[in-house]
Amino acid sequence: MSVNQDSITSRHPSLYYADKIEEICAPLRRFDITYFRYIKNYSDNKHITLCDNKEWTKNFYAKGYHHISILLKDPELHKSGFILWSALQDAKTFLEDAEFGFNIGNGITLVEKRDNYCEFYNFGSSAHNKQIINFYLNNLDVLKRFTMYFKEKARPYIEHAEKIPIKISAHIGQTQTNKTFDRYHLERLHKQTYNIKQKYLKETKINNYKFTAGELKGIVLSGRELDCVLHILQGHNTKETADQLNISPRTVETHLSNIREKLNCSSKTAIKQKLLNCGFEIYKH
Image: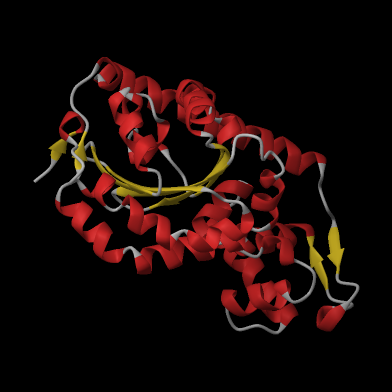
């Protein structure tokens, strides 16, 4: 059973549990994170959402922002990672409404892509708190930990919401033509980013990297081994690493075998932990 976005009442989980979600979000207030919204968007045009701000949720659907929100597009368009709200040019209308009407702004969204759905964790602060962006970027591990804490504490509310998801009805913004355009637009952006990264990798080619401190002092990695290491630290698998580096998966496995031998590690997990202990803390999530 699902409900149309126009049929959301105060008894619907998206609104009914706002106070409970606010209680769960109490630890975030230590960092001046004053807004949180969870979205689980399915591939069948349905989604669930839980937010600590009931009034903004009502306003979001009342003004039809669900039709233009990039987070409620086809989940296949997204990749795991994070998005700064300032980069969401297509969302300018409702972001300005959130800022000036509800004092919600300066946000970041963590994206977790799954097989047939995407989960989005939206963190925001007050409209004037621009310095919070530096906090986000330097403390992604804090935000990631909260997503796990949230999933545990909000499990009964999520399960209830999943029984009556919100279905977005047909709309000019949801026609097949526009969906095709959305897909084309995002795939073009991904391709542009990929091409830029390939040029950047060529321009910043590293012949070798020598550890100068810690238990790995004196060990030397080749440039390609270093590239593979950086992808391991970001949680990428062999295929993803191969795609990003424009090499074959077999070549990646060869580099990983060499890395394991050099670092005296038996697994990717062991490699990651040893690197985090030797100067690569910036990649800790």
